Structures are given as structure tokens and as C-alpha cells.
Image 1 (cartoon, helix red, strand yellow):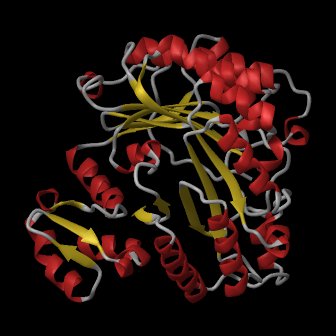
Image 2: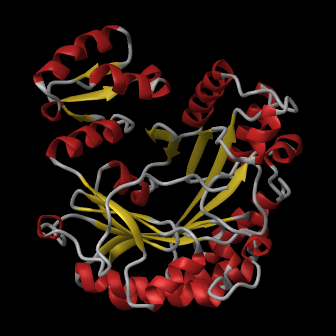
Length: 402
């Protein structure tokens, strides 16, 4: 089942934000995330806030139509709180956004545009399962203004897909990439997962080869995390599958860096590689601490140092909005030092690193030792992670921060 969000503090029923958080809205970049909570089936490793038709049943307020009405109502709330400020990126994630009919997904983007002007050249992304789209579907999205497609490939090996309980056929990804190019998507990304139980380095190498054969503009390669409460965790707990090995994960990461770099893609964040001009601007908005409003059940938002997250079930989400209330379950208001620490945590994942003046004097004094260990590059005004530093990013942050 989906993981549990933090406790937080009560969020105002009217969705209002502190004056200090709103003060810079419009001067800081603004993004929108739209969470579509539907999936055809639940993958064994997944703990995202998603629901299959069987899990939702026929309960009132759980249908796609009810979700669409509620999402539009939350867009109205976002407009009333933030004002009609220009949006730089829009990202439809899930779940599987492309389980919605193409006109419905296009209509959601139109609802965004009706309330928030899109910047010139705005990046508009949707995630997709390869089995959930066809050429006509993709053509409808491009006509509606979508510019970027992110495909969940995960692996090219049927055995690995079976362990992950992914239901698409490997060859389908190549078909979808071709359709997306012909439809006019300006950027196509594929997502991979490495380190699953029973996977071999040969399996991972084959997946990298298959992904690169598609000539993608962007590749995300994520290390598998065994989340408590998932079917995968239960199978490992019963001894049916081995627990993923950290050394194997490291070998996979290094192979990904070697192959992707040789193919002309550059790592701009720990888990993301792109061709020039194709880095995900929406993902960078998260890493750089920009403002974003998350629409949908369980979606998270951040504006001016205030973080909040919505109630998780589509029925409860819709009921709150129908009653004229914010769907926010709780929030956190970060103080100046918490915001600074969060910047360090996030920006050390980026290849460009972070400004030295973001660190305290004590933290700056630790930099030479991390450079000597081959974990950081030190420049006159910045520190950046090395390849080894990217591989050990969490440990670098722990060693650096007060």
C-alpha cells in the first residue's frame, strides 16, 4: 500500500498560505504537478499513491469523472491562492495519466491554461505506460500542447519485468517512441530501474543497450528501493527472492554512467541523464527549490518554504473540494535554516552542485576532506559532486552538514 506521509501541522481549510510565502510568488519560477492516481494494475515494488479499479470499486467519488471534476476544482483553488502567475512547467504523473482518455488529459491541460498562463516554451510532460497509448492518443496530446513524453520502460528483460510485476512487453517501448516522434513530441524520456532481485549485470547491460537504441533525449535510471508494505518486500521477507545487493547497485550505476555518457547523454542529477537542452526542467524545479503546486490525491506542494500534502484517497480528495475546502491534509512551514539544509540536500544531487556561501563556516571546513576522498570538486565559489560523490550522495550530505 502507499507509504504514509509525515505528520505535519494542520493546514488551513481555505488553502491560504502565510504572507511571507506568498511575497515572492510571481518572482520565483512556478510549476504545476498533476497527480493522476489510476493504474491498470499495481506493480509489486510500487508504494506510490495509486489505485486500480478493483481497489477503488464503485464507491461514490472514486470514478475518473469525479477525479477530473475535483482536479479542476483544485486548480481553481490554486488560482485563488497564488493569483494568475505564469507557469514554467507542467507535469502529469501518477499512477498512469494515460489511463485517462486522451480528450480528458488534454482537457486537464486546457483547464491549467485557463487559470495560469503558460510561459513561452513551457515544458509540458506526461508519464505513460507503453501499453496505454497509441498513435492517435499521442497526436491528441501534442495538439493539446504536450511537449514531453516520459515512458516507463524499467527493463528490456522479460524476467526482470516479471519480478517487478510490470505488464508491458519490452518491444512496445520502441513502437511508442516512434509514434511519439512522428506525433511531434519535442523530447522523449525513458525510465529504467536497476538492482531488482535476480537481475544480473548482463540483464542491466541489455536494458541500457535497448534504451539507447531508441535514441532517447533523456534517461532516468533509478536504483530499486524495497519499500515496506509492498508485495516485493513481502516476497523478499518470505525468502522467495534475495534482497538487492548494494554492491550490485553500485556496479549498475557505474555501467549506466559509462554507457549513457558514451552515447552523448550527460548526468545533470544523480539519477538523470540528458542530451543538451533536454534536461527535465520540471524535475530541476524540485531540486532547485522552486515553487510548485501539486494537484490531485496525495500530491505534494511547495511555495515559499511552505510544504503541504493532500489527502490520499480520491474519494476523500473529491469530497473536500466539493465542500469548498482545501484537500490539504497537513503542512510544514520551514524556517530559514531548514530551508538552507534542504537546499544542500537537494542541490548536492545536481552536477552543477551548490554555492559555497550556502554552507556554514564549519561545513566549509569539511570540504577539503571530502575533496581528498574523491567525493567533491571544489571551485572558487561552488562545490560539485564527483562521480563517486554522486554514487554516495546521501553519505556526502551526512558528512558535510552540521
